[in-house]
Length: 308
Image 1 (spheres, rainbow, N blue to C red):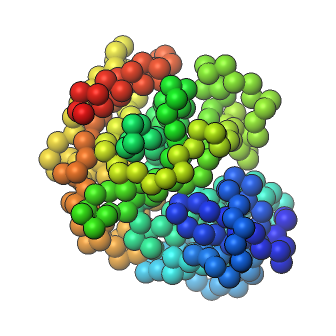
Image 2: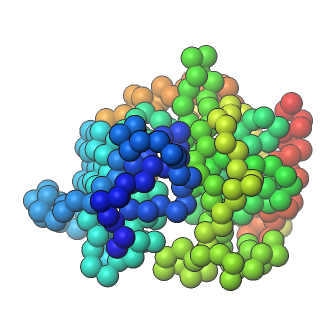
C-alpha cells in the first residue's frame, strides 16, 4: 500500500481531487493541495464498520453517507460529496483499492453532488457527446474503442458525469483518459496485451490509456445508445420512446440503488425529465455470437448523420 502523507492533485470528472494514494490513471494538476473538490485519505474505519455494518450486507447508505466493504480489498467511506476515506485490508493491492476509488466511490461522490452518473462509455462525435450504456459484458467499451479507431475521442469510460445547463441541456464532463478492454477486444483491434496493465484479478481485462484520443472539454449530450446482446443474426435498431426513456436512464444510472438511499428520487426523476426531450435514445441489439463493434460503429454514425 503506497498511501503516504504526500498529497497529489488530480483532475477528473470535472473535479479537483487530492489523494494520499497515487492514482496514475488520472491527469495531475500543478496547484496547491488546499484547492480541491474531493479529498481521498487513508483512515482506520474498522471500528465504524463493526459498529454500523448490518449482517450479510456490504453497504450502508444514507443521505450524504456511503460506507461499504469490498472483501479482501478495503473498507470505504464517502461523505458529503467531498470526502473519501479508505482502510486497506491486509493483502490487498493498490490496483484493487484504486478500482473502487475510481468506480463506486466516485459514483457516490457524483451523486452526492447531484451530478448524474450514467454507467457506460461516452464518445465525442462532431462536437457532441454520445453515451453507450448497457449491462456488464454488453460491449460498451469495445464499441467506444471502435469509434476511437475512426478518429473520434473518448469522454468517459465506465462513469459518465452529466449535469444540466441553465437551459436544461445535458452536459457530459470528461472523466479521465483510460479504457478497460477485454483480451478478445484487444485481439480484434490488433493490440498486444503485453503492452497494457491487467485490471486486478481480471487477468483478461486490461487498462488502456488513451491520452491522445481524449476529449478534454465538456460537450452537450445528444444521444444515448443502449447496447443489448441478442440471439439475432443481424443488428437491430429500435428508438426508445416515451416513458421507456425514463426506465432506460434509471436502469443505467451507476449504482442506481444509491438513488433512494441518498434521498434523491425526486432529483433523479426531475433531472431525467429535463433530459429525455433533449436527446435521442436508441436500443442496439447486437448478435452475441460474433464481433460486431465495427458494424455497430457504422450503424451509430449513420443514425447520427440522419438525425443531424
